[in-house]
Image 1 (tube, helix red, strand yellow):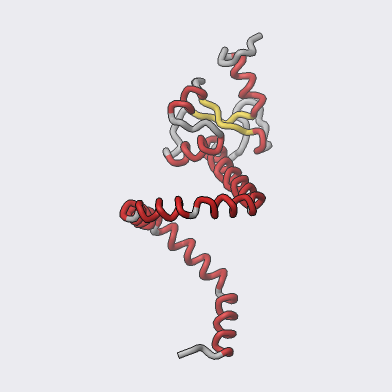
Image 2 (cartoon, rainbow, N blue to C red; image 1 turned 90 degrees about the vertical axis):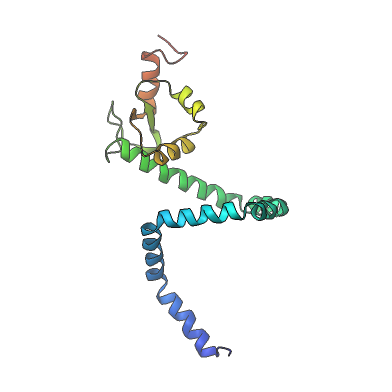
Length: 170
């Protein structure tokens, strides 16, 4: 049985009217069932790994072309994702204040995570997280381990010099 034009119109309007509620419900459901969803995705991936790999290798050129055509959108999405994870991590380690532990600077663009005892480069190499974004993700994934603090870029640079962690010594 085919839907009439009136039925199609009604359904379009209904979906437009309920879009916000459906999105909120889906978000709440995903939060409540996060582990089960993650496990289901992992199980599917493991059961279909060959099929998935074959699909991606067959469509590699299409994907590259699509990314080239949508470069600006990809960069914007990546930047937004980075800023979100950075804000979460900075907020956690500064106890919600988003402030440098030494000088009180509050501009998020200059706030960074500092290894309290030093050795940040060696640690990032050890866990294979060399950039800020992947390091922030690692911190979140590992339930925000201790031994870190929030410093602005200036204070972090000064700390490196004072503690002899840098080639720039006075």
